[in-house]
Length: 437
Image 1 (tube, helix red, strand yellow):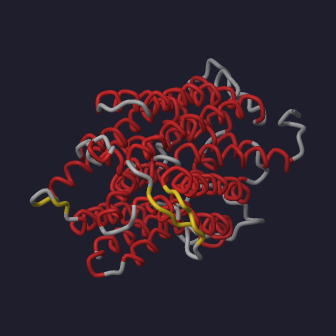
Image 2 (cartoon, one colour):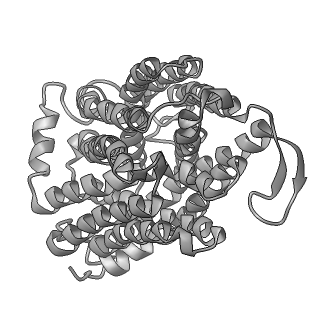
Image 3 (cartoon, one colour):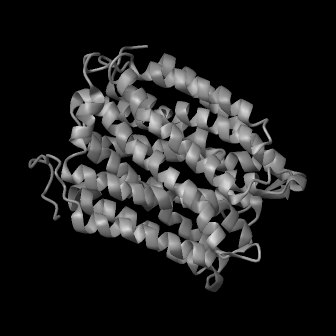
């Protein structure tokens, strides 16, 4: 294997694409259906967790891992060890944790192991971004083309797993996911197997990181205090407003992943089609990623991120009107998720990369990732149980009321970004026209 400094750029980009594919495949195989099998009754093969327990398992545990993430990035990847080696160790240990989790049946075991898994896995989400950008000549233009392979990975596993493991007697059809079949008996038990598959993918991904990713050595001296310099960066107006907006958006983002699978089942979508339906958002994300660089050049970071934040509000308003809309419209509205993620999260990571100094990029990205995947999910995980309880009458969750409340929260994040955010990144006048604030 050639060193990252001398390897041809196409070869490096190919490895970065595989990295993103596996990073998101290891999550996409189980997260879209987690709320479904965690909430299903035990006589159906599920785990019968309460709304609060699901929120803690999927939201709070993730947040605890994200809280630890900046210290891992600052103390290891930015200061002492090659980034790809740090990722490899974290992923292999996280994969083993997932394998063990897949055999557990109690909330206590799931919650405890989910915390361990999150502490190990969450740092890789930001480290994969910063590693990719450190090997690209023009991250603003090239990063979307690399990151989109994470979306492809998510789609691949979310389609293949249900077809192989949740259905039999497959037949071709013209509509996505292009195959239909008969549900297997005790499909909830087999849904839980997705966690074990996620563990296997993570272990394989860890080995790939160790042996095949470009070498990415620390750029700062070990004695430097990365976190202090990182916190100073977030003292700038645009970075502070971005963090607060991301907290709000991250909260409603979590509500989607906790409730969407159950919501789609409740309004009549078959279990085997939940993951393919939710993957429509990932298809839309591919298209959004393809034009993200162009959008950033033409309308600027602020307007692109406003599109992403606004799509959260629009999607939840459509969900809230589900009683008046055909199921096909609700399923099609999943496409808004692609704009949500690409225009807000991906654009945000690129903006943070432009604002961060070279010797603190990992830790600066990780602080942003902490808000995206840590504090936001913590708030969302704690909120989902209370909000669901508030919207429940006679054991029936009023999803119209639930999603309307989510839209209102998202609107607050959109308004803050619209009124207060100003792009403070250094634009290259030779390549970028000035974007209106």
